[in-house]
Image (cartoon, rainbow, N blue to C red; front, side, top):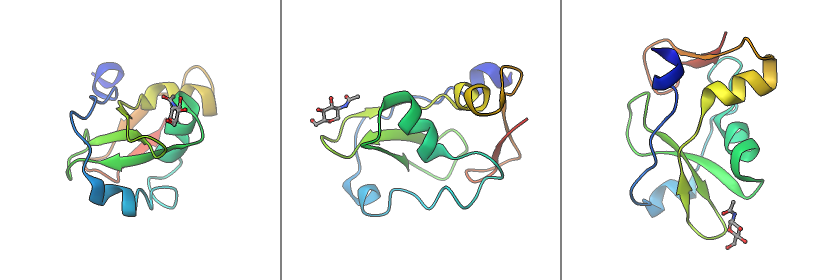
Length: 99
Ligand SMILES: *[C@@H]1O[C@H](CO)[C@@H](O)[C@H](O)[C@H]1NC(C)=O
């Protein structure tokens, strides 16, 4: 189900290499910005990162102190496009969009 599947897990540990290029995410994903979702949920010092290449591998990281947290893309879609909008995935890491 989309509502639960789009709530990504909290990454257990931080991979420093991901901080070097936290995300070239804004240009992709067709209407969804995972960086912006992280900003909305946690604050402007947070960036998006991914622990692997799977669609559920996104998480947010506080670039100031390295803390991590899960990203809720349904919440992002609702805030950005209105209450009826939810996050859907077309298959892979880069294939998130809002309805
Ligand atoms: C992010 O890290 C900074 C620096 O440690 C801290 O002041 C801030 O509270 C952190 N933000 C969140 C949402 O944890």
